[in-house]
Image 1 (cartoon, rainbow over the protein chains, first blue to last red):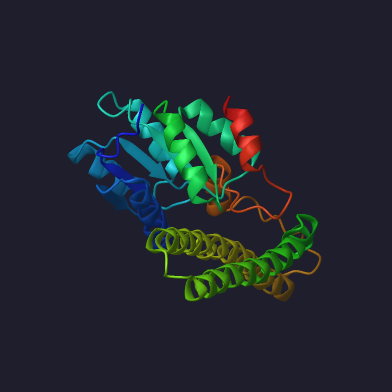
Image 2: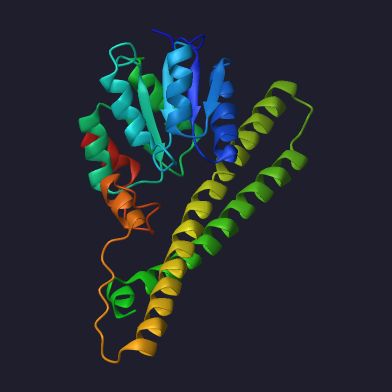
Length: 127
Length: 139
């Protein structure tokens, strides 16, 4: 089964450089339809306007963190099934466990490479 | 101020700065190596050339993620400096008014937010979990 790269992806990070990096890596994987947001509040607003097939989010952002965004998404019946990957420098065990309990589909610690991003996205979609 | 040292904040800030220097050096070397490899790539085989250049470009993108991590480390150091500044200012004020007063800093709003939202920031080498550990936790 091949990865469906036609889905819309939302990248959420307060560092514009990181958004550019992830966007370019996604392009390498074939994902062309990529939007971005710089914190959870902006991301949630975009998710209410448009359906995304995948959210890739940082954790540490203000005013809304990626962790709060994840909980909001899972708590909203119209968004709850959205695949959600956390990509973050938060690398304490309690972060990973908290994200797992909140319903994250996968978790990537920064710094990461293109192969890790590819494998984790494929894993989320069962490829 | 004793609390700041007891919490290891100042030595940790120093190690964060060391980590920043290491990370920027490593990223610079990766980017330069990739650029050198691109310059040296043999264009006589277009497919092989395209693959080599593409792989090196991906390596450059990956290396550029240092800016995110170092930015977060710098924020942690700035926060420590701000806390130090606040404590010193408080100490100076108290010493002017009453001698021998015990300082009770309590938890600031930013400390509470960090605790409630599990915000630790990037960890020093060996202090956080790696990707294999994360994968094991998620199984």
